[in-house]
Amino acid sequence: MADSTLPLIQALLTKLKEDTSLAAHLGARVYTSLPENAQFPCALIDASGTPFDTMTTEGMNHDIRITLFSRSHGAKEALELRSLVHDLLHNGSLSITEFQLVNMRASGPNRTALMRDGATWRSTIRLSAKVTN
Image (cartoon, rainbow, N blue to C red; front, side, top):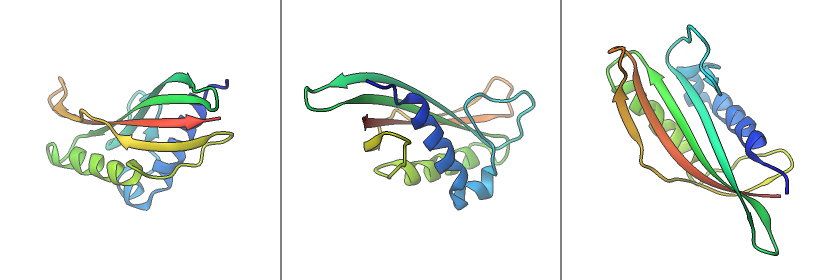
């Protein structure tokens, strides 16, 4: 069975960067690791996967975390960005190279908090995705 984690992350990067509503806020600042001196707002994608085999279907169940970072308007901008990501991805479609997305749903808990620097708000949305070969 092939691991779909990396192709899933690549498909998420593409989907988030190409969405006009998100691009108006984030531009191309959607990452898999935050660069040093990152500009805000920005998004960070992280995903892990667990294989499954039902004797007729093979694939992976993925836990996805997308974290939005903001330094303006208090928590408001981070929460608005999280809402845009939710609306785009929850029960949405995704083109994954060599794989098929069965479903993707918000799975919570979603969290929003002020970081230790006292200036950066972090808001995370969790999603679950089932991907087959």
